[in-house]
Image (cartoon, rainbow, N blue to C red; front, side, top):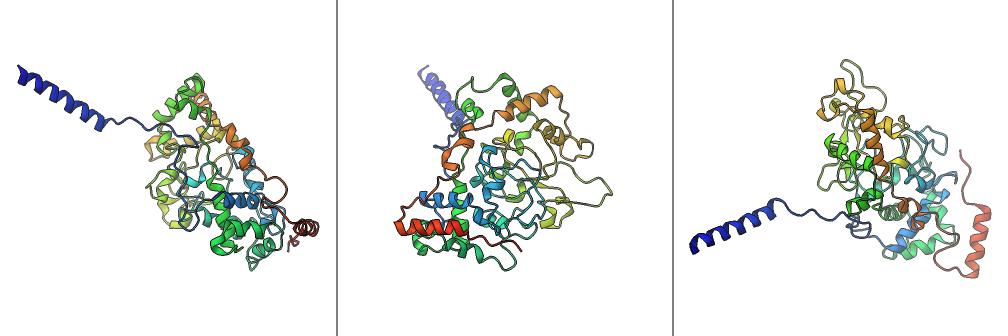
Length: 381
């Protein structure tokens, strides 16, 4: 009898251990303070002074050739660092091509543009709007690439800020250090305090009954298979190859030539990649209209309908489903619960106050006044 009791006890213990192995307790839902920081290149560690320099650059119109467009022109904090237009023309009125994406949690993403998985770190991505040609956005191209560092060197504050942020480079002001500072600031843009986040951390009253039904639909309709993880995009899933976060909602009609913006196909030249675009993150999505890569969808409800508009020619079973108007309303309520008011009003991410963070001598104050009066930005061509 004692041997039998020991057997039962040992079996129970083994079952308990097996249960622990096969069904581990889920990790707590993170906060901006507890989540691991975004990865940064070894040669560009995050520091507070570098982030502050990046913030100054982000809001400075002198980062465009004409001096009238800053990064923040297209990435407005109150809109989760997006733009309310379908696309945004550049400083010389070249038409924009793609809708502006949110910067919320962008430091965690392993691909950073709508159509190019090869752009995988923020330092490289920053060069696209500053120096890019198709389309021209901020205008430092065609031989003008050296003008921006020279412009910043002529101002009173920037030499001191670069010296403090990059002592290992002796305060070098170059396109390398400019983009490194911008990337550092963007890695601080972490959004994890929406009502849904508080709900996941245990506050059952943080979201409405409609939003709770929407969360269930979001999972059952497999929206979460692409809009995955805590950042709501498979572009931020560790270990996933960047190109695996590109998907097509509307495959080309049989026999039709591929036209317009063909997405990933431009890079790979593979027909099967036609109209594949990177999965956008959904944090603060209610603030970031219009939607899709071309900005052609005005509302969240229409964005949901758009996902099922080509069901008859889909090979992806997830997009062959139907969705009712009642389900759309619940899904919209869930997506609205991803709005992080703290993030879009955080003064640490806003336009810096006037003046230089590093104290000026009286001579430097006078130099800065003269610099502002003269304005370093040359006229456009």
